[in-house]
Image 1 (cartoon, rainbow, N blue to C red):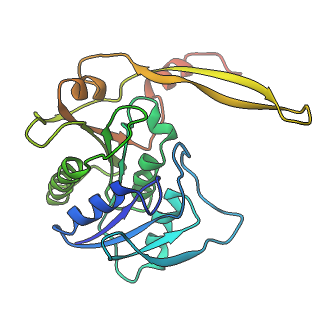
Image 2 (cartoon, rainbow, N blue to C red; image 1 turned 90 degrees about the vertical axis):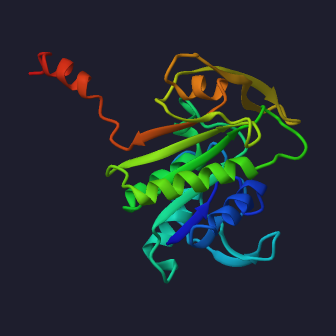
Length: 255
């Protein structure tokens, strides 16, 4: 099995290395990740400039590929001929904070897995629910082992076409994690604010900031599973059509 490992935090992120090391237990691993942080970049594809790719060593001495493109570019490059061998599955992560609720629309981690689905191979995004602005050492071992187990089960079975897995792991040790739950996407409450300032020449500029998003804690959501100490596995689809709304809109007079 050939596994592509990527992320949105950049080629030197500890979570990427931990994920790659663990996935080597399942098969051949190729690492192709951005050369800088693309967090909250959304689903970006570079179309109007050339992409550069180079080989560099990771912290464990293994060789990896890095590009000046986005996470989704990494997947597209791998699938479109950069790699000599066919990729069987894409793992994206490990993101140092959870990607839950509406965050999945912003997340470069998740959209790399989306790009895998577009290219016709299984995609799994992996994040750990570490505290916001966590400092110091972050043990990615439990999350990497969870990812390896989920990848093995996914390859043994078969994901429905057009479906990716968004995996969020509680910030716990192996023995503290209670198990796995299949969840639905929850609702985020954003507390964003716009800060207007002036540069030394009197020209305005803006910061979009505010407190971290909060969650509506509903049973069956990834928020609920994480709060109870379970790994959240949320199947996501690329078909964003609101089918009930289609029925409603069809009853309107459009002519």
